[in-house]
Length: 586
Image (cartoon, rainbow, N blue to C red):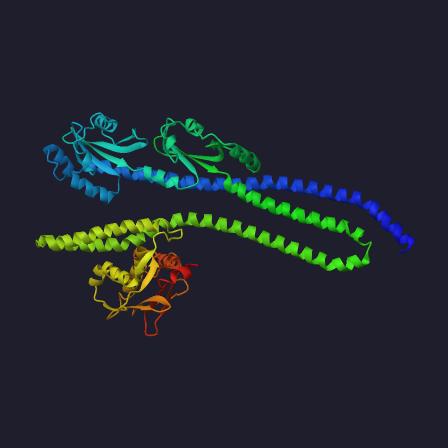
């Protein structure tokens, strides 16, 4: 090494430290500035998004409350003019009054109905345990006697909560002979809200909490309710200090936690509804992006150190040649790690956004799905009722009782269907059990028996002698088979000599094939899309096959369709055989 080279190296070594300090200081200032600005902008954005979603949910809650109140408010007006109830109050004969009210309750769908005579005594009720009870001093009886209009009353229970009732005086010859009392079940919305992350409360015109996800809030004012909180521990206080820096100023505090408050007016007697949404989702999203920014600055700082220290490494050419590959490999590995982690974070955010959007969309489809799934048992009940009426006219009581038993089974089935449809937007699986697919086919045919008897259709069944066991939810599996049979029955409506073939086979999988000789399927690509239907308006909403495909997928199988070479359509449902179901699920 020459003396000139040695002099250059010494000067480089002396000038390197202050350059490194300037570069590091500059990077730190830029990093702090970017993180602070990003924190403010991202917090504002995600808080606005969270508030918008909370306002959408608030509008949905308000609409549900108003729909229930308006629907029930008409019932007392109709029942007050019922000639049977008026005659019973005039004659004092209440032998059939409770039965009539029970039938009306099942048809209308209210919580309870009570008929009170002029002395305040319950003479008819959907709950027979309250017969003979005196309501003479109850506000809804006294207020109804004083006016000709329908009276709404909210009475505090001794055990907590409120009873919401509509009452109206029953007039005969311009004289009050009794009062009809109809209870409104608003507590079901409170129970539904309790399953959500938001805290929800409804207040009357005086500011008293009537409904709330927190039972302790009922009967208090909003300020008194929000003041109730559990004493925080030292760990909770420490976590609060470390997390509050990424959120907007709180609108309120619920159980000591900062929340976002949204409020709306319920167009009923001065009521208001409020929701309190936690900042957890905002905090998680902002922290995730800030972590990526900090990671990027850390990598940039490391790269800067590498560039600034490169001149010092030039003192030894041999060391440069040996470390060149290591530096290149290290930089490539760091870039790949940073890119992969960034992709994973972006994917998590996208999945979270998609899940929220799917839940909101499922709420809009729920009513149409319930209507479609209940059409089958309703049609069967109508047929059984007609048959039972004829049997009663012919004094064939035992056969009529059998029809009524079938109607009772259908009602139980409708309740099970509505419980299943509540989880339409979620994955099922909590009710899986070992099910014989042959029994499901037989049950579905029994369910479709009234429709099949109404037409001349040839049904052929090919079932194996041994059991075909699968792990599934029996009710949902029968719904799929019924949907396939109904589609086949509708497809052969205009066909001469209609025929439906049902074939069940067991191999690697359990395969159920439903074949008809109808007109076939014109658009196979759109067949399983929601709201796609080839039926006339009023005959279907296009959700049957979409729901059936989703159910089969949840069970670990698949549902396919094709056109038969001899004409007609062929649907195949494949499910894992019991013993292989666990492997398919994994």
